[in-house]
Length: 342
Ligand SMILES: [Zn+2]
Image (cartoon, rainbow, N blue to C red):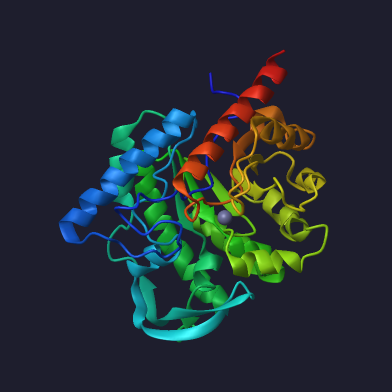
């Protein structure tokens, strides 16, 4: 029988300081060539061990083999020129220097499949693998070829589908698509964003997740959150259509955020990864705080569909903080499991 309230993380975990500079996004690698490949695999082993030790049920690679959740995937594609950079406003929020789409995009070879096979060989637990979502990929580039966000997203969806099918064949149990852009471009999400996501999961038998969050705890995001007012109702715009979609699981930010949890009623029937750990603070939640977020979510999510999780990735956090948060997540889920069993 499956564990009730299986715990997992939204994705990234801190890297060891010998692999990349800690507490930083896009942190450059400290190793090169063959040694880098070895180093990434060792870091993956450590990250997996830390998740196991904390009692996390659905484990991941902690994104130890990638520099960034969107860019690393795109780096492996044809049709994108990383030397040709333009400044664009991403997530409608902050300026960034991004690569340019210069021709038809394609995936000449698999991107993460070997890493996923390596993770699969280390554990018998369920494993989850994260990929960027098509809309978020489009939003992280300058497009000088398709000149249509929708057309480019559709091409990315086809590429993601190829990668996802190979990840499934490699033994990945759950494939997650990170779509922070779903919290910003509501009209596009409803017009083509969800359709592209469904194209990306076409023909898959494993479980699929869409992760929609308010981002890492970086300044551009915390400043943006300040402007959102006391009630964050962004999810309300996309939930009705997501409820109708083929995606199995929706991963959301809940703890310490201003998202009214009654919005979860709009996706009733879906499995929900409930973010019960805040990634924008170094303060470690108590198990009781985690339990209280989960209890609140249980009002709107059936117990067999609730997956305790983190709000977002923890890559920029100090390692001991991330470890403490994993333990709190596990202990908090355990409190609620016991209550449900009683
Ligand atoms: Zn996130």
